[in-house]
Image (cartoon, rainbow, N blue to C red; front, side, top):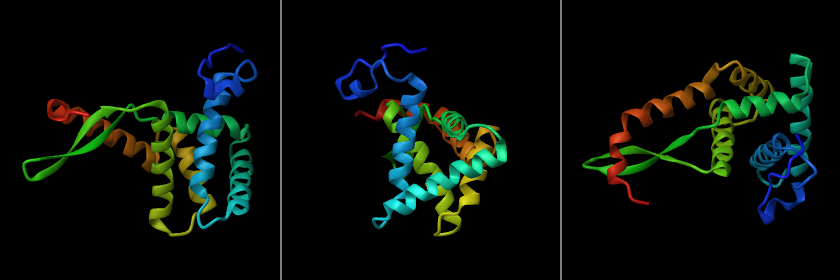
Length: 163
């Protein structure tokens, strides 16, 4: 499936070389790597990401490329809740988001879920989160369902939100 689907100039380097799955992998991998870097520890983040890939391959027995891609693609939100103050309450108004923001929200959710319990990022927690999202279980998938349910209940608020 090597097609010329990247027509924008900023995606020219992927033209004719890679398929769409690799492009998605590149976007997710890049955002995830940058979110792991804190206080200038790039080498630590690179080694940590390699350890995640090795651990995933040991547990599931298949390529970590596909495991991470499938888990993050199952967590993609179609809409996100933007805050709007109506009366004395702040309510979430559901609005669709772009593909780039979808990847960003996936990574933000996973990093937030990992860092909430412990201030340190744990290898086991990340691997459990990735594997549970493949099978549509766990906290990250519950958060996606919660956003979707809230957006369906608050769809009547779209008339108040002008962007």
